[in-house]
Amino acid sequence: PAEYYYYFNASQRNVCYLAPERFYDQTRMRNDINNDTFSTSFGKLGTSAMDIFSLGCILAELFTEQPLFTLTQMLDYRTDGYDPMPIVNKIVDIDIRAMVASMIDRDPSKRHTAEQYLDEQTGKAFPSCFYTFLLPYVQKILKEFSPDFVVYKLHRDFSYIINSLLVENNNTNENSMEIDEEKSQESSQCLLILLSLALSCMRKLKHLHSRLLALELLRLMIPLVDDQIILDRILPYV
Image (cartoon, rainbow, N blue to C red):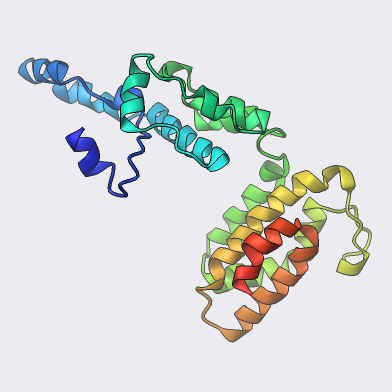
């Protein structure tokens, strides 16, 4: 507990998102040190499965707005004395719920890799446009990352982005865009990621022209997102 509070509880929230197998038994540690096998055993304390567990805990908190484990609950979870599923079951989206439940499995061998989760959730938790358009596009932008460049690029490519995500369009003029209702919900989720990228740059812009482009970009995005998104994410920056 002392090491947990020193290294992992700097925020004093008392949450614990360390994988259960991360907790090392002191008796075993002493035996390994005496037998010169500690370095080999200790090397197993950092694995990708542990990272997946921590990520699952973070996703659960994002979707339920409450922490999944405290330190006491985590220690109980190691011995099957605590069940986090009542919290996980509050996640409305069934695909996200199933993915999180898998990510926080007590048995690390039953957790999948990040690549497997991405493949399994294509078109489910993760919209297909995330793979076909969004990921390669954002990767290309971030190669020459600067806030001013990102805003310029998003504004310049806006018609291309909309054509790729939202519309069946014979004319790239924004006033003639016809939204495909069947795909609009999924595509709006991808657009929301680009909106977050633009908003993250706004307060770091160095040039007046970039600020004007950013405001124009928000104006173009507003008709394509929900009112709640406008109130929560866009208005604070305007």
